[in-house]
Length: 105
Image (cartoon, rainbow, N blue to C red; front, side, top):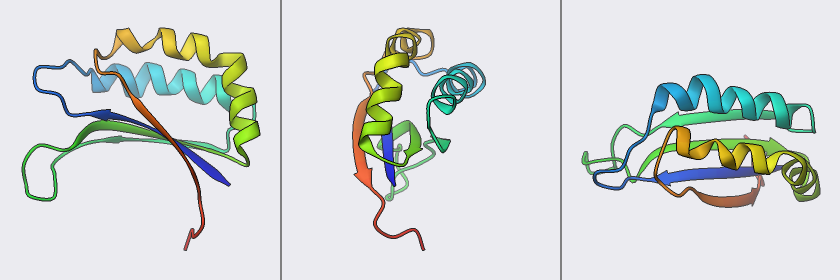
């Protein structure tokens, strides 16, 4: 199983609409990618860093698929629509990471 994480780095003065992200963007992601093999999706709202200061990331999304190929196939079909929605909730460029889940326990 793999996890695709999109993280939004904390950037002073940047805009991030958590309500839109949760209620509209992630709902769209779940609908579109869920129909194409995504197992589940989670999203996080950053609260603080380990030192109590600002969070290193204001938000993150974690999408779970059986394989990189499943993700790539789903994103090839739906990615343009998903990416086009980003300006509706933020001016932060997300960073992506694809990871193999090696221990779920």
